Image (tube, rainbow, N blue to C red):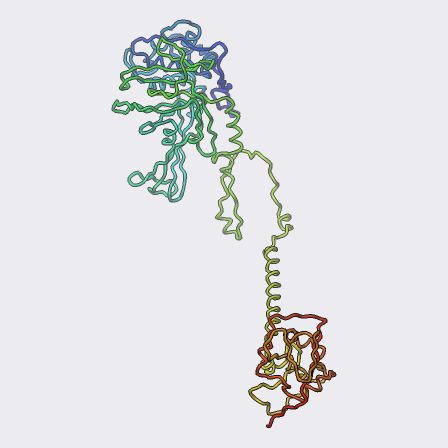
Length: 573
């Protein structure tokens, strides 16, 4: 018995079939018997055998009770009678309930004439749809008409999307389908045919599309995808051309099939199992022979060739395959529901949720897209919107990066240390002649009055400040400017005694002058050095002994005692 119509709260029906669709085999059904050929009715027999071995349809027909008056035709009642005979008889029979009413199913079909099995199957399913709509107003809503058990079993939806290449506006059109026809021209398998079915078609030139948003013809892209997959998928190969020519190349197909590659984005693509095949042997649609293969409740395959029924292997890879029947695997409904929650479609709740941008002015907020309002509730945890007081109390994020500031400080400190070290190194290379031209020596903090070798000062050198403990003439030129050029050797004067424990002249040259404790006014060498300007050393060879590249600083280092000649060198001015 057909399930009653469920009304909506406003009094309008929302679904014509509210029962649960069961895809399992009935307990009393195993495999049907053969059907006699009543004059070129092989196209009818092969289509009926595949319908009679569709588990959800068998359960619907078993519970169907139309209760219609005698004399009126009901496709569901006629098919139910054929089903009862097929599973109760043990010998073939003639499906007269269908053949006698062929003109009621399709007005252009005649007895004794060869017809196309795919065309008959489409008319037979349309007749079943009319049986479901019997007793309802003739001008019923199209969406409500698609809620019958016929569409619940065989129905699906295709989406045709046209995308404008200039403004990227999408225009979607949805069409209901009861089967899927695939073009097999230059296609070797069902997967290739499905890929070609969902291939993007470019609309340009004379085929430009008039965009709804641009209001002008533009280049566009068109693509077909499966938006809603059916429970029972019927695939039809386009083997016959409009001129009656047949494509005889084999098309590879498998027992398992997935529609995920051709599904719309965000839609779940179920997996299917093959349970029926219709083959055609011949050269054209108006000639040849149709026969079928079906899978029984036990999983065994049978060849249905009119009244002949014989067990066989799985009909995979048949060259003459014309139609394929797939049924959705068990448990797919739950997976589809879960996928819809995890990956919502663009037409659902996610379509109305737009990412809001932070605007700096009211003008930017006025031109912002706030999204599309939807009446569907949001499923999931929701956070309370922040109040103005909470927003004002929240700390503002730092404009600078703390890590970047730390790195900048480290670089500045390293640069300052390197600069100080460079100044210290350069000060060790400074010559006494260059230091004499400066005011304020960076090493001892006083003026230098040492005369150069090129010119004799015309006036006596200025006296050092009283507060300075170091005299400018206390520099031992004989030891500081080594003229021998030897490494590790100290210059000896005639009056000087040899001391093996004293350091070499090169070590003495590397010692800073301001750290020498002997260069004081109270030193005996200071008085002796004051009587001579240059001493016994040669001022022109001072560069040779002034190599301070390898300075060795030691706090315990003391310079060697220096003696000078008794002769005094005088200059005539």
